[in-house]
Amino acid sequence: DTGVSQDPRHKITKRGQNVTFRCDPISEHNRLYWYRQTLGQGPEFLTYFQNEAQLEKSRLLSDRFSAERPKGSFSTLEIQRTEQGDSAMYLCASSGSGTLGAGSGGSSTDTQYFGPGTRLTVL
Amino acid sequence: DAKTTQPPSMDCAEGRAANLPCNHSTISGNEYVYWYRQIHSQGPQYIIHGLKNNETNEMASLIITEDRKSSTLILPHATLRDTAVYYCIVREAGSSNTGKLIFGQGTTLQVKP
Image 1 (cartoon, one colour):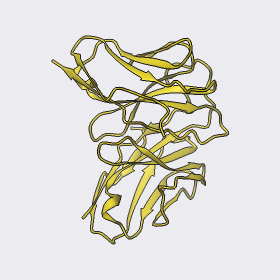
Image 2 (tube, rainbow over the protein chains, first blue to last red):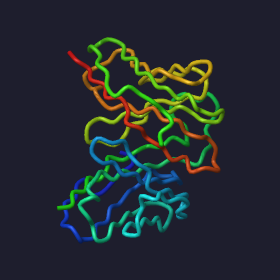
Image 3 (cartoon, rainbow over the protein chains, first blue to last red):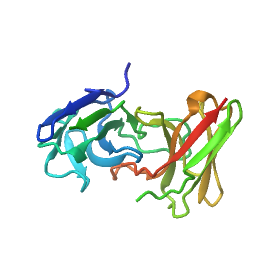
Image 4 (cartoon, each protein chain N blue to C red):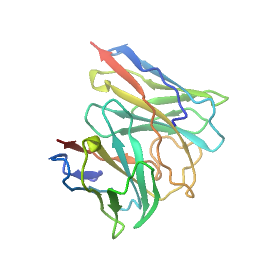
């Protein structure tokens, strides 16, 4: 399978513990995104990498959250001192570097493809 | 905030066409319309996107009005496996921006036997 993969798929932790999630994007995709999704809501943007550079962070990404993409391939998202409000699905997506072409049907290099997500439960 | 408005829920009979509407009255000239769907507890799945022309692929058709203020996603022969939340998103094109997706609440499509 050459899609986006995430690990682990599920994580249960106690409040105050640190957790780390991993995302492996589609190979040759240089853009990588993290989103968070709480129950009944649509996904919300957290942060964006182009290659190894973190170019945008949402205000949702508090100082307890840190994301890295050290070699421009896989990425990690760490949450320190977890809180019950951190319970959510954490989604990773990747896309290529191409610019959308006018009138393109079907997929393009700029289309984001999502992984299966990591469901975090903080007790 | 999301720049699109969708009905919260719709039903469709299995085998019939499902037509999912989306309003995006403030869309600008360089913004594309994207559709994703999310089956329970899975990551969003890309369906289709378009700028101003109607588009069709193996999954669906996208009809965009001439003024680009609304669009309709058509699943020509809905099956039970098409039951999902469908998100309509407008997204700015160009390599100079992040291309982040801003999701709304989406439409929950229930396909019934």
